[in-house]
Image 1 (cartoon, one colour):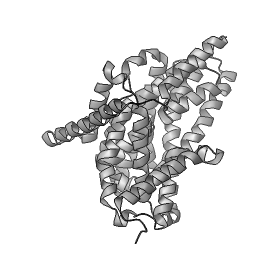
Image 2 (tube, one colour; image 1 turned 180 degrees about the vertical axis):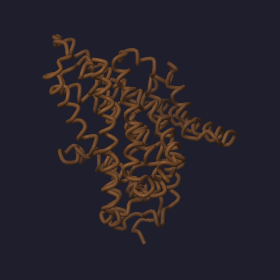
Image 3 (cartoon, one colour; image 1 turned 90 degrees about the vertical axis):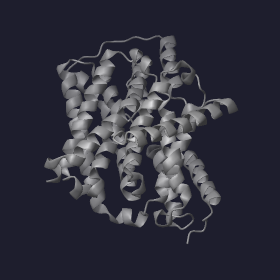
Image 4 (cartoon, rainbow, N blue to C red; image 1 turned 90 degrees about the horizontal axis):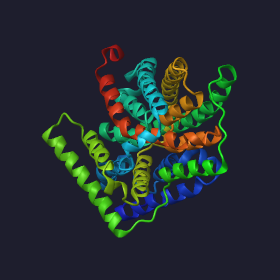
Length: 395
């Protein structure tokens, strides 16, 4: 029996794991893992040591977080997506972003073929394909949305393996997208010579940081409005799922959030990103509790299949992204940043544009990442449903 069985005590442990994970990610080793994966690992350790329940004796608290908090956290993060601001990204960035989306979706199909779908990942293979189509279109919020819809969140080992692989590949892809523009410009020069003043660079960076900052001042009224919106959005999505069962609840919730995000009063709400990220971390902590570490370490087949699947996915994505970009004579830096927006999301785009010394791409890259958040869940559901019925894959 676990040491802590009361829901309040379990919740306190989960909160403590979030705090410790945030502190650990200030260290170089854990910074590479990221807060999300660190939260999962810490909670997996505490659960497997018998401090809190695992999936075999899951308390009602876990189901409550999966049912209510997790979808609401995705709703909050989507409230930050202002589609009108995409005009500032510019047509080259948006064009290359959608080329990357096409590459990701085709890459998922090719990768799933390489691992023979259900033979590689079991009965949830199609959901896993949808998760990676979502996350490599726009980010982890899309991955979580697809996982919740298909119940992958309760298959702790499969989910943890997906998160770990996603983090590793995203980190490696940052290095690739940093090196490729320099290498390609050497043999196929495309980039113009830019000379920005210090003031211009400062302006570029300030605009970008304002888009992704997770430090905000929030009032009780802001918090009440946020929670009220989240609860109402989830209620409406659930009712739509009852009235029209063919429409997935997560799809309705995503659409409601995106529609609200275009409304000026919603854009002025404080604390949206902070509350959303906190809720995501709490959801990921419960994912960690569902992980059986001993089984995960022993399951070399799952790790091998995951690595093969994602390697093929990224290879196809890169060939389409850079191949079509080359034919269209696009700026190599723009192509790289668009690709990073797909695989890594907004924050990694900012790190990449800083490393490339392209302050003019700070904001466009972040906005492309926001566009990915907006469309990723739709792409993920489309790919998952296609894989579910693909006769060429299941034989």
